[in-house]
Image 1 (spheres, rainbow, N blue to C red):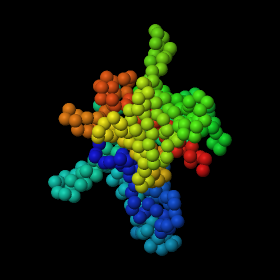
Image 2 (tube, rainbow, N blue to C red):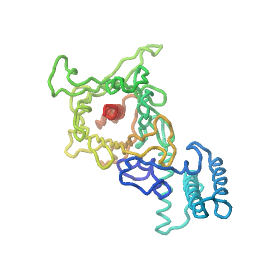
Image 3 (cartoon, helix red, strand yellow):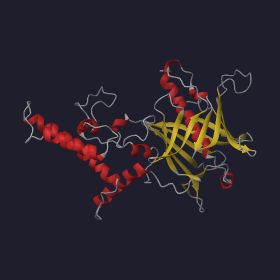
Image 4 (tube, helix red, strand yellow):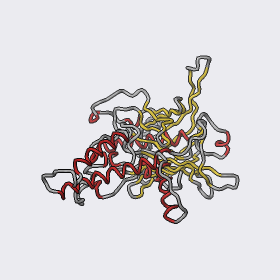
Length: 379
């Protein structure tokens, strides 16, 4: 993985080609969306078309619009413009296809050669993601793709490049098709699945009700994260062990903080929520250190519609982007470095250095996603 910062993985994954042919008009300042055709529209193909199909469509359109071959009623000028748009769209797609398939290599040691090689490497990394070295460890950076349709219970898909390795799902969700009259999913129970196994579960209690009959305005929402353990020969009886509790994730300001408590009720971490231009952030810090070290950084970039992405979406129900997650630890010299995390149960080494179990990060992100989703629906 290249060393881009914050929401870099989302930015790489959804890198835009901003050449002129991408837009259909002169670019009105009142256009808030991204109208116009993309490269697939120009070539008359769908986003899941094979390269052979795209190439065949290009050849057909090129013959119809080439100034020397086309008999255009609007004159050769219109034919030339159409041909240039079609050629530019095909060249763009072919270049990306060559880079991703590693058929295009850079030869040379000059400044621009190195820059071009780095660019190709970034595109390949964005497409394939970092190498997952062990299924016992989460990658030190990966995406959590948000759902784009309310009907699916799969709130987040955990992916590395094009590979799905986990998801966060609603528990026993009733299928609802009328989104206007739905009850919010923001306070439903969640499960974290990795490699086909339920790794952790979470419950959330709304404000004002998490401490019995207390009606104070200061009461915050409460998220509890548990590890399930199977018991008995049939492994169907499960006990739940409390990992930690998050207070105030939904009730704290958009740019504010909330806290994490361990199973003993001691405050261990603070979650900082803030925004930069078009990006939402959640950073996790330990609270009992003179110099707080960020052990997890999550960024969620606001993206244009998926038809303008560099790569077609991996899943049609998760095609709006999502969170880019990076986790950190310390090396033997005490330096902060990217760190893969153990997800199956509790790792003694992580308990020793007081890092949170990664399930707490991921389930908190899922609830944050549901809060954002619910706010959009209620507008």
